[in-house]
Length: 351
Ligand SMILES: *Cc1c(COP(=O)(O)O)cnc(C)c1O
Image (cartoon, rainbow, N blue to C red; front, side):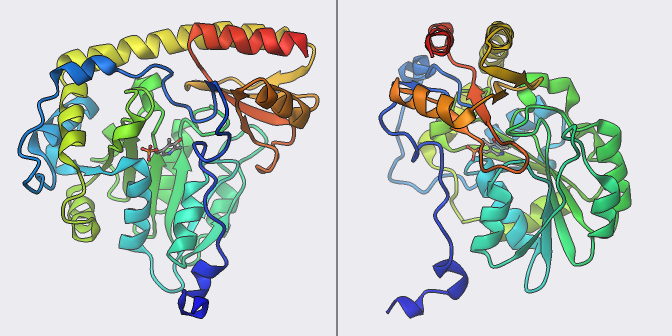
């Protein structure tokens, strides 16, 4: 019977999400989440009409997010997390021999999504400074319909140069869509490419409430793009993608007060990151702390695997990057609460 399964699916290995890896931890620093749940939201939730199908694209959320992102309402699609946006874009633009292109070390889901859809991936690594290699991208554009770039990049933590992204958009005009994954842009909001949507028809931006908004569990993300793209994605997305509880919480998170609370969380996270970075840099087992504009730090240790295993034994779960391209001995550490960060540093000092 297993032969009934599509061959390209049979050969896949399931995505190793952070939540699957490391079930016994007590300190979770492996998924770039905000470390505290906004439980105050529970008090204001009034669930009714659960018997009815939800609004497919709740107008209140569309308007609130458009307002936050400073784009038009017709340039916004609500998705089940940023990950659904990635898959929808590939399903909408790619078929048969079409390819996606991505630039490792970067987020793993571009390839995973393409693999599940039987779409080939082309790989053009980032430069040594984790920048775009525009020359090599240009040489590899044949059959490429969608290019995924990530800025701030996960797991390296840096922004891609704005002028490089603009060059890429210009180079691929009328040839390929450029998806800029801005999952971490709320931590450096003025760097967003959203204001380029009016200049580039081939620009698509991915956003999420999973990181700075501290709402990874509700599965809510956004695609920002020009209206013709949004309308095409609408044809592909499921009829009722946004569950009513998710919509209610997203409404609150995107209210003026919700945005203010998110900004406070960003400020706290950036403060804690500075503290953690300084402590890490002072440790003899650390070779290098990469500069990060996001809510995590990529750290190169002298022996990354030993550090990862040691922390694991202590219940501190980080994200090992040893198999990522050019990231031997590197571990990605999410910024936790101050108590969690201190526990991490204490553990590392004892190693
Ligand atoms: C976390 C993340 C996402 C999306 O996460 P969702 O929870 O599906 O919204 C997208 N891209 C990158 C780079 C991420 O780190």
